[in-house]
Image (tube, rainbow, N blue to C red; front, side):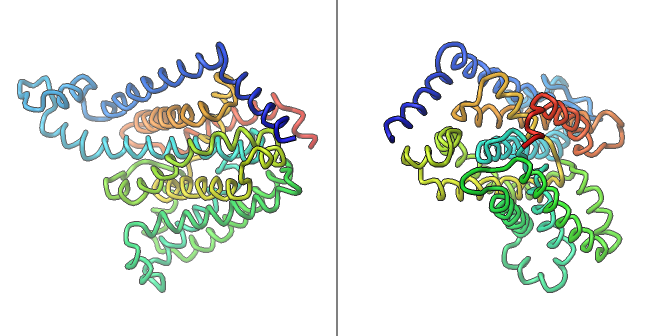
Length: 367
């Protein structure tokens, strides 16, 4: 039986890595890498300042130039202390949300799993809101103990608790019900929203303004301190994700088949859940609610390069980072000099895309 299951997995991975699909995946990854570099330069050069991408590159390569073709002192401050932290944070969060979506979809074995749709982001947001509102009360010693890491850790534990509850409710005898998962996610999101509402009610005017803008999702206010608080958690989760690829491929055959292939299924699921919760929690803590990245990016890439997670996870990280930077550039320029919350942009694009997935896979509504 073990040999038969191994042959099945070998056949699946061989088909996923042969011919055009393997070449297409590698080409896509190379193109996505180039796209990310161009998007980062575009994001650095976009805004009220007239600094161009060429001037930014020239300042990097020849910082001693002073003939006016490189950055002025004012533009250098804008680029390196305002835009560059925002770009770095956007890359980290976009990659984290996209990879989290891909891992959740592989873990639950359905295309509708997404941290934002099934309540994980709401749970992470609740953890962050509790710290923001109650940080000056009895949680003061906790803030003093963990410092800048308090908010990401609180969001991580909120997202972890929500993910564990969701998995326990939606999975029965090794099979995950899509309908149960979606309904449980709605219920968990509603519960987290209710408790978040209580926290908002207790907030003062300054906290209320911050929470309102934060809840819509934004990269505004990105600083190197925020990157230092959430970045290590996100980077660690992203480093773990490639090691999940083979296990996710095996889970596509079912948990029993993955077990016979030598995958420690329960331990693997625990690592995957913690990884998703860590990446989502840290992202929500510093950027607020940015939805639909985790469902749009992996689904587009599956249509392009197939479901092999050995390619899909890396490609998701690259495309997720690029898409979030582009959405951020739109949010900064569409109503300039004001700024539109980035969560509105991703929802405006992701909502219709989600409906398209439902219509394309109409049969899932009957489960």
